[in-house]
Image (cartoon, rainbow, N blue to C red; front, side, top):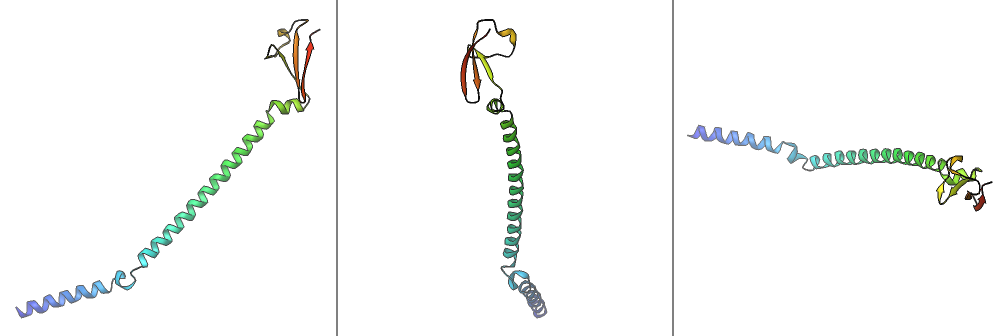
Amino acid sequence: MRISLIKKVELMKLRYEKATSSMVFKEPFRKINDNYLKLDTYIKSLENIIEVKQEKYKTQYDNLIAKLDTLSPLKTLYRGYSIIEKNNKVIKSINELNQGDLVQIKFSDGKKQAKVM
């Protein structure tokens, strides 16, 4: 019985030494600090991804705005063109006009009425 108790005490002593030599007892906050570092890395990575996507969408937005500005009817009028309307409908063909019709001509700086000759 004595030998059995001695072996049991030695086994418990080995378990105790193993437990006290583990990283949890030597550096209890190391695992937490390592995870903080990983978390910081993930956050920085996400911030970079978000910034890249924002820049990409900003560029796309600027391109769409430029296209929209180019196609703007007001820009067309500023270049010297005009829009002719009859009864509040845009005239797209000469066949829509008859002699004596009253039309409204829109310019970049205003409107005037005219009579078709």
